[in-house]
Length: 411
Image (cartoon, rainbow, N blue to C red; front, top):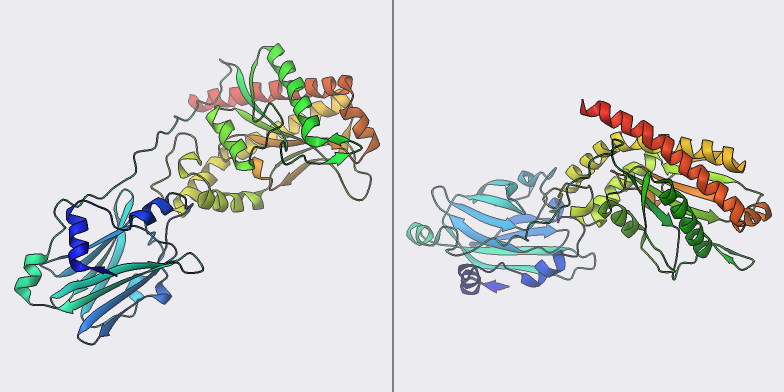
């Protein structure tokens, strides 16, 4: 527990309490939430004891205000949305419990006091098995004069905020007046080789095909191309999406060649994100992703998961039909150029690399390494050339229609 003199000295020096927790919080993917059912405000003899359970440790500061008498606790950051803090069991000395946002990066809990209660001890206990924390505050009876003399925000206490994130402006949607930026994502790589059949490794094969496809697209003149990897290195799935956003990609194509344990599946398949998976994707991204990297041009670090999820869902209202149109074009052109399509060439799934809410994204299974015919095709430079030309034509048709739609939206 932190004694009152130590507490006041820290605040007067302009320090944020629990600095180690501040550093720990940098690694957390979501804001802390109060656990109302495990919190209470109770008489402790003549004293008042406040127990607030939190989902994770956060920096805080505490002080009192007079006329009317209040206890104020500021947090960085606790999400009070949807929490009925007024329902917390409490002593008759506490006349009201209010909570909400205070300023960017901070929220506030205010307890109305019916008597002059002085802060005696305050501390945040951490180390629970579930990663949570418990704030405990004890107040002792005082007199009105002493309470008034000690009330007020601590002089010199500065609420420390992270430096504003440098957010890359959202790239303008292509309207046909510049090359289309395509991010190619060769699946797997490094410590993740993907499928392996008869000495053929999916990671190596997709890297070779991505290089072939890049050459075809760049030779066309209508495309700029970048790749998530250009060697045998491991790139985390969510990092691949971040790289696409950083590059200002107009389209994201992930390239794979899987195996099936049973059956005789063969031919190309094109996936987009399923509706069910998109809902889960918003939740997971909001919890786990760098919040300044959820949507291009928007810094969501000051918003809770609900707001972030709503904004991502809104972005998908625009992006999902564009992804679907790209997938249909790819199925059509791959069929015409190679004649090798799966019996169900157009599917939806929850692949991580399809979860960018603001970039039209598809995953192309060029074939199955478990199929003798597909293995022969995928290792044949002539077949790979035809497949690359099919993808080029699909991208060109899609980009032309997409640009026409973008021009109409601008008018």
